[in-house]
Image (cartoon, rainbow, N blue to C red; front, side, top):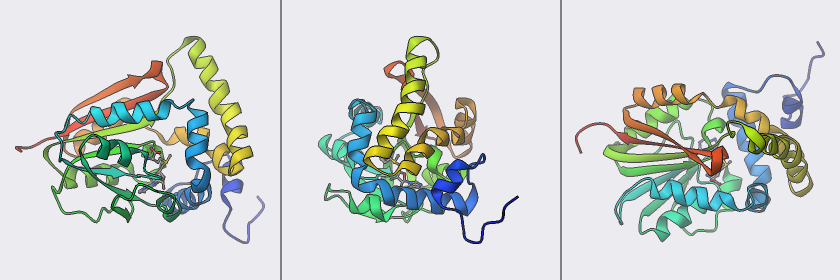
Length: 245
Ligand SMILES: C[S@@+](CC[C@H](N)C(=O)[O-])C[C@H]1O[C@@H](n2cnc3c(N)ncnc32)[C@H](O)[C@@H]1O
């Protein structure tokens, strides 16, 4: 096997058969989002036909929290969730790993650079958490869920949005062509080609529903529910922090 003298770039890793893990994954995810931040919103809108906005709204509503509740938007990126949360009368704060994504965030909301596996928040300090399309990007999902279990007060709610694949039929065929063939080309034209080749491959990191449910239970969440959105194009996991409010 050919030896590399310097660490592999994202493009090289994406071309490799294996996906990065551990600290290497964290570093690559961070540099990838730094690179795509300026055009992230544009590519997102195009590749979801604008449906991503509706999915975030559904996710925010599923929290079921009253106006004034303090909500952490984990992996807030450019801030779409923060806008929706504040528009619903909630008090959001955003955390993200990538300085580039935070710099592209124009919401004027309080933002913090941190890893979801080590949140700079006090125990029980938030009423809820939203998190959009980031589960598969976390290096240690169990550690992130444990942090959510720590910072959400008993009785608080989480609403985690992720990509999904329709079960069957024409929608599945269309989805596969779009997500695996068109999105990488579209992203490559408008933004960073390596990042948008990585995107469809990164779904391999996403555990099956039962494993996600078990990890959330282990982190102290009950009433874990999976909601299928738009025929299976996205999925939403909601849960309640166990314990007496
Ligand atoms: C696909 S983007 C989603 C951004 C935003 N939530 C949205 O709905 O558009 C994934 C985000 O996860 C962030 N991220 C990845 N790993 C992270 C980590 N360990 N801790 C915090 N944020 C992370 C990335 O920087 C990026 O902004």
